[in-house]
Image (cartoon, rainbow, N blue to C red; front, top):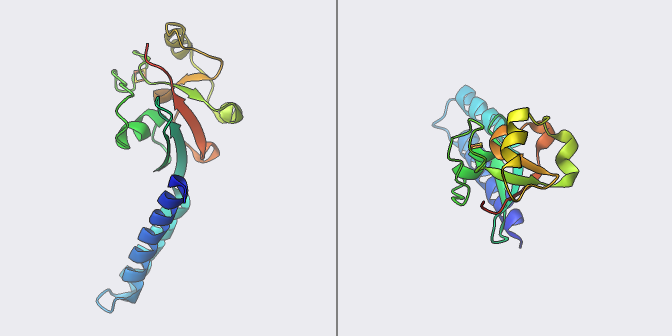
Length: 151
Ligand code: FES
């Protein structure tokens, strides 16, 4: 079984177990159990996927909520090869990623600041972006990025 399938299965099992616990237990008042179950279902429905290829070629399938930047999702997952020194202020270019061509049209347009910072990188290619400037939304779910080589 691939890592992605295993991760997805684990996620579904976890939320199903929570849902079952919330609805089956006689301790929970009916209304509270229903609210908890609905929250679990909503969370499951609105989790987005980000696929990250690290510098050593490892592919990781991450789940994240909408509204977080790609850089934040990568850091929250414990991938420490991305420095992101400025914390997302668009002033360091250490969060450089290469986006899969298939997703280019779904990304927000690049600002002048972002483009200038990327020009300073010796590893810039046509699909290069700063991951702190890419805020994940529904249209971008399944986004595939590769962490660029270090400058
Ligand atoms: S974290 Fe510094 S530019 Fe993205």
